Structures are given as structure tokens and as C-alpha cells.
Length: 177
Image (cartoon, rainbow, N blue to C red; front, side, top):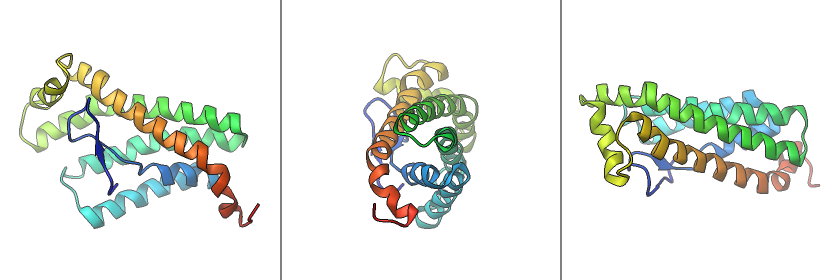
């Protein structure tokens, strides 16, 4: 969470990071509960190192959205540990993070940020409108900014995990083969 990158189609307060990667890899190695615990530890470390600028709303959201990605992906992989199942589980996890991120933003995050910052939600939507004129309300904000953001995050984390897991899994198994 220390290395964050803004994406050109989303407001600056959405930054891409690869912080779900350790949870996905840990979940593949040891199961969904481990993935959830890694997500939790990630949030605690972020709070200790950087603090919060969102009244904990962003941290809660990051945890919930991360869990919505890691749990389905690692639970599916847990049943049958093959390359094809890993690929399928990453697709399911990516769909889940995209849907959960969009719904969470629409019904919890954007309203919570509006309350915390003492503004109307339309002010937050305007940040998206400045980048993409098709963003005119919360629904289009989530459709054109939040969903693509989470889709890219899920694809990137999945691709890195898919390519690297076989090479690093011997470390988790305690062998060099």
C-alpha cells in the first residue's frame, strides 16, 4: 500500500496498488482464512506506517474489497489445485472485486466520504466528471471509474499471482523443487 499509482480514468483518490497480492498468494498457499488474515495485517500495518486520512472509511473499504477478491479466488483454488482452476479462481475473484467495489462505493463509501468531508455526494461525482464527462451521477461514477479500477486491480494481481505462484510455492511447502 506504500506504492500507489493513480489511473487516468479515475479521480486521484483511487490509487492502484498491489497490496492484495500477498493475501492472494498466501490464500493460495494456505487457504482463504490465511488470505483474510493477511488482508487484516496489511490494514494494520498501513495504519501504523501511514495513519488514516479517511476516518478509517478507506481502510475498512480496502479490507472488505480485498476480502471479496481473495476469499472466492482462494476458496475455489483450495478444492483443486491445478493451473486451470487457479486461472478460473482468479477470474471469479476479479469479478467479485469489481462487483463488491462498485456496490460498496455506491452504497457505503461515497456516502460515508460525503459525511466525513461535509459535502454532498455530487461534489465527489464532479471529481469523476472532470476526468470523464460521461460520469454524471453515482451510478455512472461506479460504472466508468470504480468498476474499471477494480477490474484492472483484479487482473493485475491475478496475472502476477498466476505467473509467479508456481515458482514461489516451494517456499511455502518447505522444498526446493
